[in-house]
Image 1 (cartoon, rainbow, N blue to C red):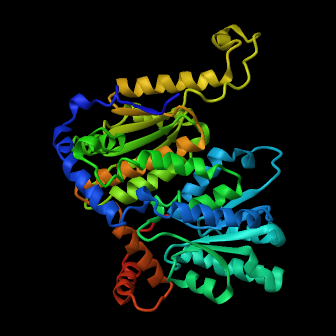
Image 2: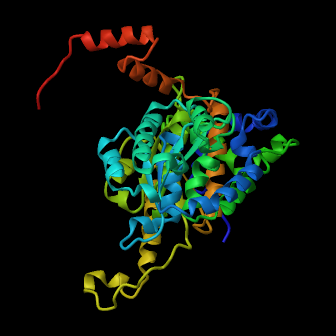
Length: 446
């Protein structure tokens, strides 16, 4: 079964898409320029051949470990978690044996102390992911795990470390050079939220035994036209990523400032969190953008779906489905009469029925919706989805007139946090922080 987009309920006739569609030549020329200059490695994947060889060289090494502790935050962790939950669900199921992936993606003392107390040092590899090598939430954990490994493993501690960072500079690159730690590079111009199909996401994927070739080939299939040096506006206009971008930009013009990502593939739920960072961090700039809202079918039919259906009419929806999901066990045939409608039917049929019902109800309640219908729920399809949504995000940003590759507002919070910890410099931030902390506050007990 093919992968496709169903536009039937997208409400295109109610949107002014012509202006954006008329910019296809401009967008095609920009893609040719940006990909030619090496500024969109997410799409061009110039690193693919070398990375596959590097991963092949690591395969036997990684097989010597039972546990991988991944230290990363944001894009350094969200993609890896989405892949783990989609393609290695057995780790979260009863009776699991085999490799286990643990992800330290927050300043969480409870979790960190559990890793220190319960992970077996001899059978654990610690993978630290930071392009800059200076992300304190990540590198701070590295310092603690480094000390832990030195205490338990002695001179062999560095053999249990793997670093994913800039190829030439930064603190972690210095660690590679000082201690001979194994390392793979994050390519230049590859931001964290676009990095899942690089070493960032593929090292843990390979550790868990996923088909990384299928993941990459799926992405390359979607990106092939977008990276063609002869790309024309006419060709781009027919590509789903541009069509989604036109739709998303036109929706914002009409006041649809929330984008629901409703996943009716239960194991793919964490792709909603991955998409949320991708969409929010790329497009939330200069007073523009639409707020991403991850949702899981059928779980969220019984919670936030009330707001989707009957709240403010400011929501659009990307609706993720897969008609070929497993059928599962059958319902018993001797059910009470009030449940006779499911007697003898496949458990999985209920998911499909619930998904169809929600899709129709959203449409009937004024929520513009595009269905992302995957022919299968395999790794190639995941690679295609990752590339499609990434490309659509970039093109949406360009159509909006903003840069979808930076995140200036995020950096302010980081500087203020460093000022709070009394890092050198940052005089302006320290003054702002002092003013904030010494101001009169309206504090009330509850």
